[in-house]
Image (cartoon, rainbow, N blue to C red; front, side, top):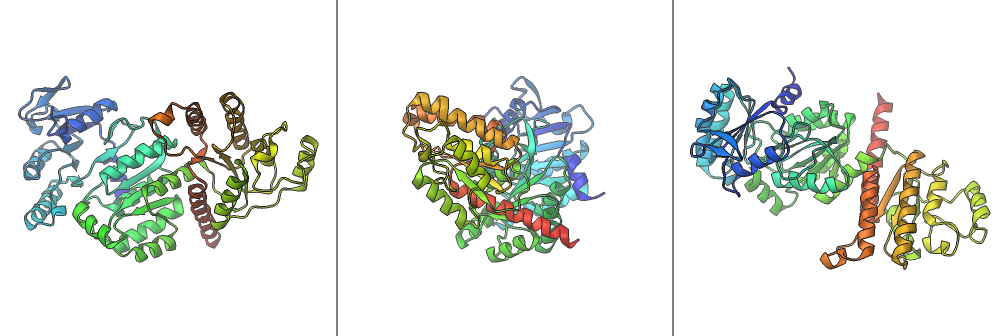
Length: 484
C-alpha cells in the first residue's frame, strides 16, 4: 500500500503512551503529558515511569509492557538515548507501529558513538516493523484528535498542513499563524528524519484530503531526486510553500548540528522550487503571510489592484510597493466616476487610484465605501483596504464610524465575490500603548476582520509580496493545465 496511506493510519492513533512521563515541570515527559491532557486527546492515554504511581491523577505504569491492553498505537519517547533500544523491544511486544523520539543527542551531535546508536535504533525498529518519527522532534499536532506538541494551540481544524524539521519553528508557525486566523489539518515535526523523512511527508500531505495548503520548514533532504519528483506532483495538486533553512554558510553548519541535515546549495533549491511550481520564502513571517494569502483568497491570476485608505503619503507609498511587485493600478472607470459625481460632485474628477482618504473629509462618503462600489465592477482583480493610524480623529468618531465602516465595507466586498486584502498596521506597541483607546480599537477591528475570514497583513510590503507569489502560483497552475 502507498506510503501516504500508511502514514495516515500512524498519525491517527487511538492510544498513546508517554514513556518518561514526569512530574518535573520542565521535562519533556511532563510537557507532553500536559499537551495531551490540556488539548483533550480523544484516545487512551498511558503514562510510563518506573518511579511514579500517578501523574495528574492518571495511573502510571512502571514499564510499557505493564500496560494491560495488548497493543498501543503511538509511543512518545522522553527518555535518554541510551534507553531507546530497550524501549523498542517493549514496543515490539505491545504491537506499537509508531515511535516518536523526542529523545535527542544522537546523530546531530556529530559524535561517532551517538551516530552509531541512531543507526542501531533504526535497524532495530525496522526489524520490529516500527516506524520512527525523529529523533529530536516534537512530533504530531492534530487538533481533530486532540494531539498537540505545544501549549494552547488552536483546537479547531483547518486547511493548512505541513512538516517542519524544527520543533520550535513548528510551534512558532502554528501559534503566530493562528493569530492571523489560520487553522490546521495537522503539523508534523520530524527532526533528524532517521526514518520518516521530508519526501515521505510531502507525499503524505499531497494526498491528505484534510490538507489544502502545504507549509514546510526544511534544513536538508536525504534524496534530492526523490524529493524533486514528489514536489513536482504535489505542487500540481495544491500550493506548497517551503522555508529553506541553512541557506548561508553559518546556517548550513547549524543545520548539521541541529538535525544532522545536509543543507545543500540555495541556488539549487531556488531553481528546483521554481521549476516545479513550489513557493520559496525566506523567513517564518513570510511563511505565515503566504499561508494567510492562500487560506483566505481564491485563485487569482490577474494583477490589477485598486487601493483605498490612508492619507496622500500613505496611499502613494502603498501604490509604489504594489507596482514594484509587478501589479498594475488601473484608472477608475467612467461608470464609477458617474456614480461618484452623483454623491460627491466636488471630487468626481479628482479621485485617482490609489484613493486618498483625506480627500473625503467633510463629505458624506468614506474612502473605503468606494472599494465596496468598485467590487461590483470588472476593472480590477484585487481590492486593497488600508486601515492606518494617520487619521487625526477622536475616539468616538474613530471607533464608531471609521472602524465600523471599514469592517462593514470589507465584508460587503467579500460578499460581492471580489478578492479583498486588508492592510492593518498595528505598530510595535508595548504595555503602555495597549492602554490607549486607539490601539485597543484597531486591535479589536483587526480581530473582527480576521474572524470574518479576511486576509489581513501588517504592512503593504508584506501584503504585496505574498500576493505576488499567490498570483504567480495560480498563473503557473493555469499554464500547466493548458499544457495537458
